[in-house]
Image (tube, rainbow, N blue to C red; front, side, top):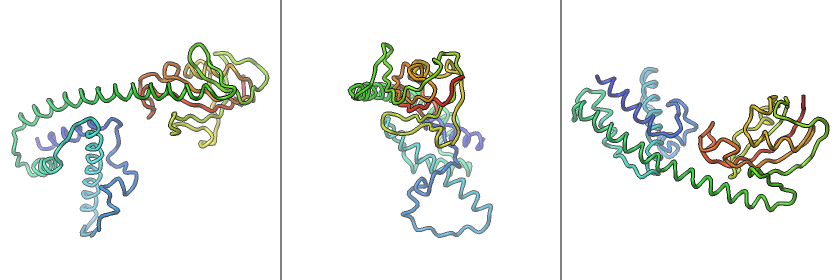
Length: 252
């Protein structure tokens, strides 16, 4: 029963995080309760103790990050009570019945989902607004064209050769960023261009790459309706306006 409760607690904190993260995926020492500011005294005697301690720190870091995310949606949890609950679950000396705990967690999960959805809606609106503002400013740059669908593009090199269609196999190098400059994909860094059929990619690419030919280069600013819409994809927030710098290496 204790392990069932621990499983429920861990699952509960998985729900609290919007982007799942393994307990073992600590990016740096700064992820662990600002550990760089703490004097460490190693009193661990063997590998079993070190393993247990490492798992505890990893779980604690994960929970601590969850708290920060909860604060952003107006939810606060007392850390001392949580630590006390973990200790009691391990010892088996609980202050609440399993029925009470289950009922409390179910109610809180309902509240959490509601508040999370409210925050997500706010984020979607804000992302859309900021994207519209970015596109308005970008459209004023020399040489930028806007299509009826809302796509903005700037041909840097037109290229030459075959006209690209949806059934065309193309090979490209590209860099993709959000409007704040955060890079989410880059074939140059991977050191390998990408080959694909044009109809298999997002609408912004399908439309935009038809404005250049082999050897051409183009910058695309893609609104959400031509990108990934309101869904979060691979760390790209919902309703994101996307910026791509694309080099069309080959056309088959």
